[in-house]
Length: 207
Image (cartoon, rainbow, N blue to C red; front, side, top):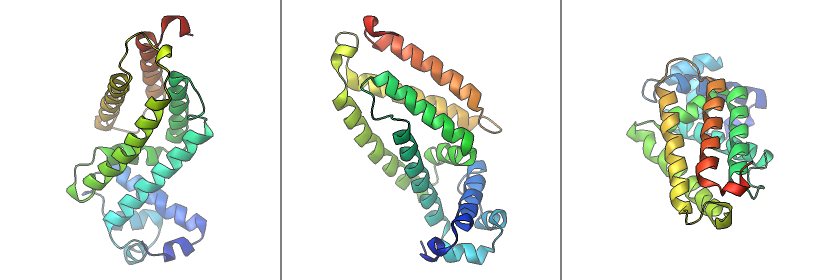
């Protein structure tokens, strides 16, 4: 990326970033032309290419920006401070709901990018996601106390089961038309979390 982008006033940077999130959130990578992003940002296409050498560079930049913002928000909600696994998951849900409400285009972009199948970017997106997920899973499972869960529970399998269920639900969101229904997302995941508590958490520890 051209360093001249960072020399722009912050307000101008954000206008370009938000325009790009909006365009990529509404279409696949292949069907999101740089000209449309430039128009939405109120700049020329040539100037956009001056800041980002090609569409792939801009796309991956947006992914990294979204990842950094998400981690910051998770930290601000204390998602890594709780010793209770399900409390941690609930805090994470609240953090992501806030992102979805305050930055709906970015949230929609992240979901679409995760399921993007264009070879030009899909491999790098998945590698980035898997690196984060692998480290997060290791750190999380390492901190879990087996005594907090039903006897004999395989904690790795529990984590994978919850992850696959979450990914499957988010995949359904992508196939729906229109903007993300944040209220429905909150209701559905709250029900999932209550279900997971019921089947995995030790009975005397249930709230």
